[in-house]
Amino acid sequence: MDQISIQKGRIVTLEEGNGLEKIIDKVQAPVAAVVVMACNRANYLERALKSILKHQSSVPSKYPLFVSQDGEDPDVKSKALSYNQLTYMQHLDHEPVHTERPEEMIVYYKIARHYKWALDQLFYKHNFSRVIILEGATILLYDMEISPDFFDYFEAAVALLESDKSIMAVSSWNDNGQKQFVQDPYMLYRSDFFPGLGWMLAKSTWDELSPKWPKAYPCGVDWKSMDLNYLMEDKYVKHFADMVKNARLVYGTDDVLKECNIDCDVRIQYKDETDFKHIARQFGIFEEWKVVQLPIHLSNNRNRVILLIDF
Image (cartoon, rainbow, N blue to C red):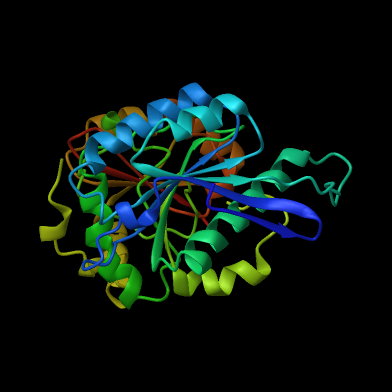
């Protein structure tokens, strides 16, 4: 046990493991710390850690691994401490939760507290410049496995994150990123919708977010050789506008059938929530109305489909 800190009469932090000095290269600065947010699902945690370590073992000093557990589930703690390649952190929060509305679930407040605490620890105590958050074993979220290009992808994106301050975070997750909906697996998009699950945040951004963090509801390719400058804010506006402009406009309720017979990129515009969900069901994509004002990009592996709200 390295440290127990007591604030406001409650234990808030507990760290155990082999120590960061054994993990971090004293010469090469880490690209980012990687933290798996955990709660009470030991089997999912194990699955996530095996996936991470499979691809992180060749670059451990670039991506020091942490597990941050919220609560006292003994199986989760035991599982995390069984790995000598990571540092374990435990958040013990016994303060009562007072929801703002009677119907709200307490768990969302607990999750928000845990995230703020963990990110404060990694940015301010351990002084990392960037953190990759994996929401792999929390109480409400499903397990996550990473792809072989996961670490190359984030390393390539560091330059964007550092040079374009309009980018809040870089994410490796897309709700509609299944193979059947993707035309170009190397294309990245800017989005005003926060996708979560596997995302990288810079310390400069956390300096802004930490003081106003909400009480609840927070939120195989050589990527390093690719030119990602089109994602810079000044270039992306034109890049995306040209993409939409050059796509053929399609109307009607049989959009999917029409799209199958069109040999070019298409643009489908919908009017309201009912219209969007009808089209989403035809494609078999995520029917999440809160993203309606954002473009959704799909593919039949032959051409690109862009769904846009018709203002």
